[in-house]
Length: 320
Image (cartoon, rainbow, N blue to C red; front, side, top):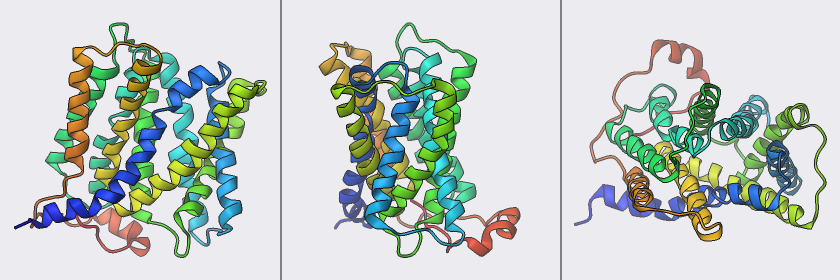
């Protein structure tokens, strides 16, 4: 007889596979940026990845946010896109050897902790354990012997993981505006994040680079695929899957980047890297398993949270 947990896992499988397409595709960003785009302009690449994709989505949907959602989409777009891209750029610039990827892989751990205070879920030892395993696996895959530990880079990498974790958790808590589809929801966030990036990009990089045919192809990939299509899938997945399950799928991105480096750039994957792959994949699979039947979220809302947010919160979330 099939257990309820097994049935729940099978029921989530199609949504999980669709959501996983987003971080799988984001794993191509590194090789596209290094091989197709003009060097020295990663923030401009992030701007073209976000703003045009957002404007296309808004033109297709024409569904404006109303009331409190005007501020919420601005907050989510800034966290999920606008702040994230510059922090990733700083971490990547100052931390050689894949240390930045390992730091940002801590995002599922942060989500597991934030779920306690923001979503009122119990702290899951299972999710914390597999989160640590996932970070360790990514570290084995991407950290080389020349790894550096610049304090500013480390702070930027951890901040990137933190803002992404907060953005994912708030996206889960707030849900989606009534009557707004996933495309419009992603479009407003991409637009908000892109608008945030305009002054940051100009101040950090100056005028945009010349764009040739090869670069134009790369920018189109970032905009239409790594921007518009995948963020629609990502935000739709966050809304329908347990937040910790969706977050751990983010580990797929550095794994794909490492695979593409091996296949297309001739980078070597030795036994240590292969062990890391196995650990990271095990963490991803374990993160999709539902809680055991009868497990309760337990605990009451903190008094400060109830007084501040009860008016705008929905019913209490179930454990993932």
